[in-house]
Length: 453
Ligand code: ADP
Ligand code: MG
Image (cartoon, rainbow, N blue to C red; front, top):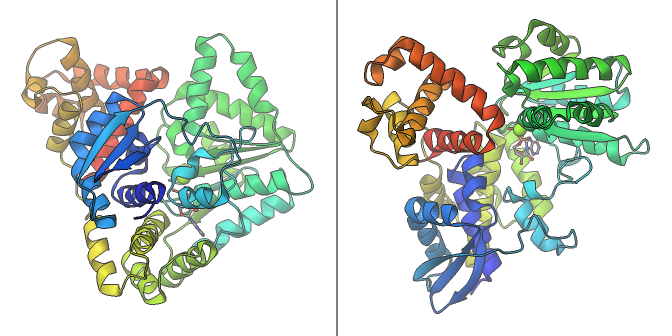
């Protein structure tokens, strides 16, 4: 029998592959197997919300994966426990465990408290190919002469292509080389909520002080400042203070500055004033080289023909490539042997789901499911609180993610006036800046919309 940690890591590896990052981390963070007894597995979860969600949405999958790993497993019990989470644990985790979870995406949790950087991202582990060589060269140029010619460094490209890895590696390099620079890494969303909180708590000065004190500031996913006027204003001044004192700023984004909508012109021109480079999709050779490196560094049980197969079918994202390799490795470990190509094919067929396109109807359905109301109430005139909020969220999503016109949204939602839709959109947009719970809910809904089944 494989041990409970390995068993659960196997489940995580497979679930990660079929879920969005946000969803995976929402539902599987801080879960583990508490004990295993006579065919029953007791899964420990942090709260009832997660328990209910796992039971309703993922129970079958989890059981299926567990049975694949250990035929003797009959049932799963979900228990709520205030466990010591991986997050809380001191750094002296056994190395083996750390490597294991590191590769399962959970090591987002092992971040350095001072710099907010994840030490797993290094330049050494960053594989360079034609798709990212310009970005890599720009990163090296910044390392050589920080705060001068290439300020800011602005790296953009699609999801899962290595932006975070590269910009964090530069941060880690600055911290660890002889100059020991004071580096800070943050996503633009956390930056925004930090700012809003500081304003609410009348601590705006502290906020300014905190962010101005570093030698190098790394801001990830800057596209999310779109439409946030106050955040953009603060960022503009912050940028100027770095620029004028010769301190380096590094940004990543999923789009080039030109394509970020609702961005103040003066900020756009700052972004464009340094070095802009993109990372494109990796070619086959690069994909193969990335997973070969990973397998070698981690002593994974995956053969070359399997790697070639994976590199040929998983084309769009390095994150997915890694996920596929993890799944194969976990299965191989459970079976204590290499998998053959046939087994790999059938395994990946089940876990790599075809992308589905999302319709307006899906938005209504998923939002009403999420808030446990009947979909048809969304169209009715009722102003009950428990209906108004989901309805506003539907309006917000249709506008924000689908660029649907206000009148059309109004029409779809039971013939409402376009100004009502406009207000709802503006309201949610404002509220998510200050209401973390709401922001999380919307993030989860998006995860369900774009990534589940
Ligand atoms: P992005 O920020 O662009 O969405 P990430 O930086 O999070 O992408 O990369 C996704 C995964 O792929 C990470 O686990 C990362 O370590 C890995 N990865 C990305 N690019 C490379 C590369 N060039 N070499 C090795 N691993 C990479
Ligand atoms: Mg990223």
